Length: 101
View 1 (spheres, one colour):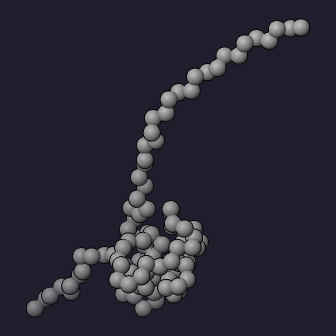
View 2 (tube, helix red, strand yellow; view 1 turned 180 degrees about the vertical axis):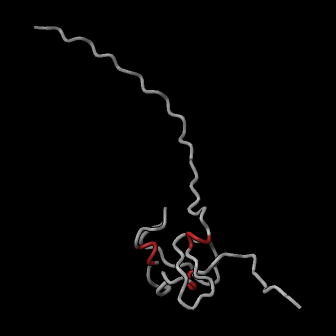
View 3 (cartoon, one colour; view 1 turned 60 degrees about the vertical axis):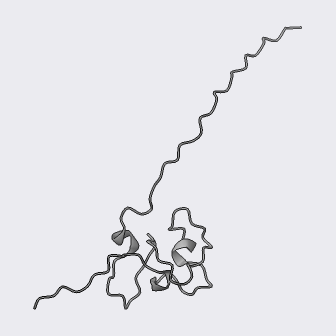
């Protein structure tokens, strides 16, 4: 019988599985290096079993899949263009000519 190994369809990771997470009480190394768009350089790893996709993911040496976060999820970071609220054009103030004394 030629059975394929099971592949989990959930490709998200936990911070604990990342080489950039030195400990849960220290900032993420990728965030500290300002590699994560829109993330504070002091960001703490997500606690517990919170799974997500992170462009700063670096696999640990013993991980079976050695692809980085950018290789796994090339669309990250999601760049969303937020439209600015419409502004009223400023009225140009016309200067009155000075009277010469």
